[in-house]
Image (spheres, rainbow, N blue to C red):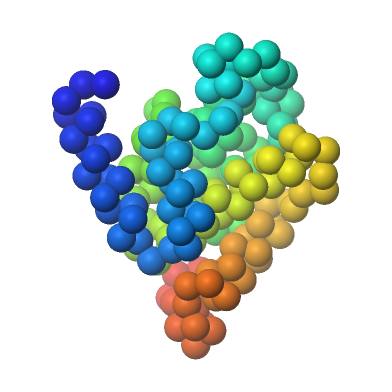
Amino acid sequence: MQPSTSIWINSTLKDVWKLKLSDKVKYFLWRGLTNFLPTSDNLVRRQIQIDTACKFCGHCKELVVHLFNTCKMARGVCKELTVQEEIEGAITFQDVFEQRKCRLPKNKFLIWVTYMWDLWYQRNLKTNGEPFRAAKEITSFAEGFLINHIYAPEQWKEISSRILV
């Protein structure tokens, strides 16, 4: 890791812990930004033999950037949130994170992060052969999660009316 990258990561990680999100969502972000999510590519790099196909589409190798940016499931979640479906040129989780952080209003960014956290959870359910939610259901769940764990219902009503248009 080059010094400038290291400085960016340290600064970004400090900012992550300040976000108004559940600790489990922040931990997910931390794992993604430090490249410690156990995606197929990361597990293979650690010499764990597994199927490397994307758990959702089965067509691509499960790279972090595929799972959270180019996979049809990630694009479906972004479509539900009405954000650009794919970040061009992204090659890491950090790239996707930074692009979304720069392009989205803060509250919409927090919603997107929560969606990605639930997408990861659904990926794990599917990996273990359990039922999982579709993209549309992920958005409903994530909004409910934010209401129940972060914002009071009145705050959420005001926030969502401003950003979910």
